[in-house]
Image (tube, rainbow over all chains, first blue to last red; front, side, top):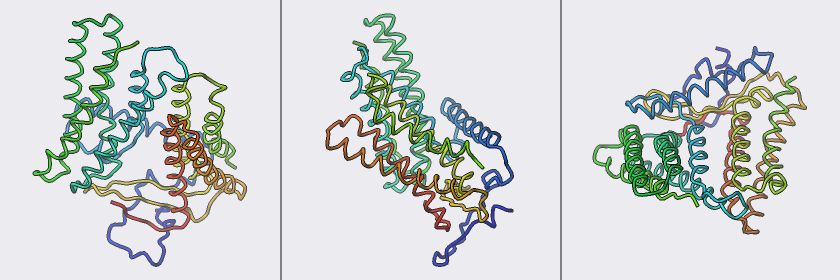
Length: 217
Length: 147
């Protein structure tokens, strides 16, 4: 219980009955003398948590793992890869590509923040970062759709390729929306569920639209 | 006593700032610079939050969500720190100076109208200020619940 002795509480804050006891793995590590071992453990633990969440998105069952241990690494990686793939196909230069990349970034993060604020204003019980985490991770199916679209576009950009891309994007859009709704709608009272689902639907719709209308120069 | 931690504490933050200032020399591509700086800022955030704070000054902060879904921010301070005066000073200087520099970048970007960098600068400010705020909270002591 060495970790407990170190928590200091200032005098003028009333102590309520909600003090959480830091669990063993989080307490300060006083005994490590080398830097390597604890850092490697920390890195592996975080990497495994990220991997587990990706799996949870692909098979969305109502589980609390995604909700409790939130992290924003997955959304960052997905956002960056999606923005990279949505680059206009022209050669790297200072003027081209720049605004588009930053636009995708801003749309995804700003959109996620707005949806989170919306659900909190509607009285949701989920916390700010948890909601961002879920929305960010559920972009995974759409990132896969983008990858597929780019591969299909390499083969050609006629009607058949458009139909294939349309089907793939619609399927992944449905998957994303269903996955995130499975996690987020439960935190709302029943009569508000549609009000929460609608912005999520719009958010993924905008991203799907960007993916579907992407044509390399 | 923790030279590697001290090095990494400063390495990511300073590299991010240097890359931002001299990105025109490194590469012509806006995207490459953006992604590089963003990754450096993220690694810096993670390493300062999870490793260097714990090792250099014995402070740690995190967010914990308990069984019924309420989120708590926990700020922890070690009473007997195993660090030296110099390391603590480097830690706090690095922690305070870099957000100030990013704020300066924010205004310079805004007024020189290089707006495509604004998103990156805002990300940099938020990440570094979050660590600064968290550690100041730890230092001042106390536990807070934010739902």
